[in-house]
Amino acid sequence: MKYTETAPKLFMNTGTRFPRRIIWAMGLIKRSCAKVNAELGLIDKKITDAIIKASEDLMNGKLDDKIILDVFQTGSGTGLNMNVNEVIAELASSYSGLKVHPNDHVNFGQSSNDTVPTAIRIAAVAEVNDKLLPSLQKIISSLNRKAEEYKDVIKAGRTHLRDALPVTLGQELSAYADAFQHDYEQIVNILEYVKELPIGGTATGTGLNTHPEFQERVISELNKSTALGFKPANRFRAMRLLTDLLLLSGSIRNIAIDLYRLSQDIRLMFSGPFTGLNEIDLPTQEEIAGSSIMPGKTNPVTVEASLLISAQVVGLDHANQFVSMLGEFELSMGIPLMGYNIITEVNLISEALNKISSLVIDGMVANVEKMKRYAESSPSLITVISPIIGYDKASEIGKKLNKGLSIREALRELGYKDEEIDKILDLKRLVQPGFTTNK
Image 1 (cartoon, rainbow, N blue to C red):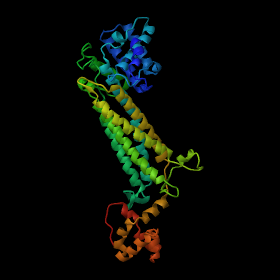
Image 2: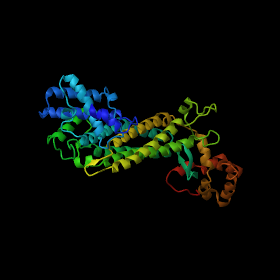
Image 3: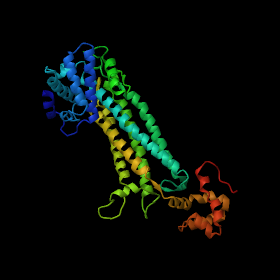
Image 4: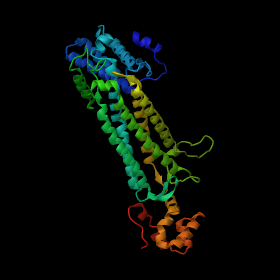
């Protein structure tokens, strides 16, 4: 294994290894290419069978400890491809009793320049399908369920972190359900672009030293194994540019930003219990201590962990912007890092979405009376009730609100009975379209 033994001296040695999904994708490509080369009569059947068996071992995780080259390597991913070729060749040789060569046999009809860009796209599509899309569906379902449950729970609206007209908790949660639904649809659309694979382009996209039918046949073989609907790319584009993957990364970043905003709102609503808003309870967060020195303290730990993940995903996407600009002419020089970052983003954001759904949204309990009191304490209501009770009385109420009374308490002090107050403070009128009147 001359290449794999020598390369660590020249590459970085950070301990950053390729994710399982990318190693799986490389094994899948090697198996598919071997099958196609055998069908075309280009490689001996016994050697082919051994390559297929060794490739399946790689796919199944049996050889992960042998894929040792750092992610921070040559920008084409040649290090990864050569590492894989040598590992498969050595094992295939032992299986067949023949001399299986890493380049002449395992890499036949291929180049690092088309296999690794193909592998990172296969890995990205598979990871998104298996992890990200289900986690998005989960949080959309959770938010819609809670939005329906709390559709009539009225709370103070806030703009600029200042009191504003009332909304319902259900309306606030529905905003995020809608945002994540759009994120889901955007990801599904972008995946169709990422599914275009440049395999068969060999060194510069021309396909020199491979069969003219190689690209179509290999992609057909990949689809038999995955049912993911991969398609032939313009090889010159998909080897030179990673902007399809940058689009995917940007969409994951958008999810992270939506999650960040949701987490911030939840964190504020959970603040307290006595010196914050205390609008919601999160019983699941009580399962571990919130402080090493303050007994009985509960912190929104799952929410804060999600904020950290959101920040990391945004950072990885920013790195991908630079990664996408690396390279000149026929080849990108950011391929290994783009693959690593995308898979990392998917795993991070999927974990956060799943935990927020099951531990935070599903377990959220509204403090209904606290929310109602805040809504009735908002100075913005003075403007709304002024046409009903008159300007002078509304001014008196404004002064009482400044002393800490709620509008309900101020109206009582002005002599209004509870049934009259209930009519005046019909907050349900204020959380839907329409005009207030003095009737």
